[in-house]
Length: 119
Image 1 (cartoon, rainbow, N blue to C red):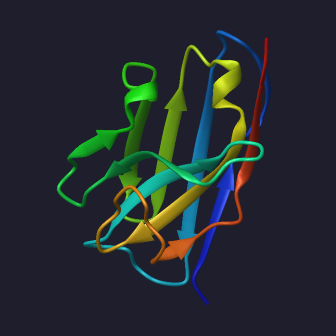
Image 2 (tube, rainbow, N blue to C red):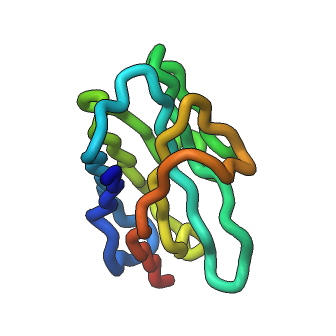
């Protein structure tokens, strides 16, 4: 059974940092892209960042220069979040798919980890 497990969320003050991790199990994700999405309170899920198998990365404009996505191995994904803002408050989800794009619905999803940024 394929599972994606996010960890590292929590409560942080504005300007602080967090490191999110996603561990995938149940299959080998060689050749897959992986990405991070988030659902702010009362809003739709939105794209945050993605990394292709090639290593190419993409970010939504609001996190550019503050967040960094990386992949330690085919099944481990990390999101370094710096200079956090209250608008970054959301449940963060990990996704793995042949291609990860904004508006993603398919692929494998984790259950999410809560990030709360206080002002």
